[in-house]
Length: 207
Image (cartoon, rainbow, N blue to C red; front, top):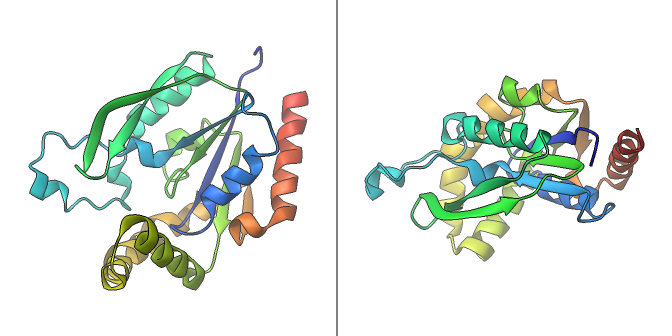
């Protein structure tokens, strides 16, 4: 790999379809071409805090993320060197001892609710995408996901959405839309936008 990797940021609210968009773009290329790095892996290590304090973590706030490490890792990948991606343990609410060895690839997709929030990350990106989905669709998707995959009650999901997710979205996530080069409505269902993205990436790769 001789050229500098292409860095793409994919942001959007919780339940917007960021992951579906990222997956749909990735499927148009080989595994050797695209590397996806989820911002969720870069929540701060909280091992120094008592467990009770960790339970109060606001995972939708910019300060929850270790962007310093994420930026360092992206720069390392841009230099064609591998990284050890951290793993977050949600049962213990802190970083796991485990890491994942990740090799550089031609395209790096950074995906997360606040991936467009830090100017230092924006400066590393070639293409910035915001997945824009109506709030009612996002809350329904989040409800279904958290109840099915995380064993949550409907009351706890709604309470968290009203008290944390929605205010954080309005304060921090929604304003980052202004930095996007491309806004994709309705997430992974928007096949035209995903085709255009894939074509653009291929054009850059062809150089």
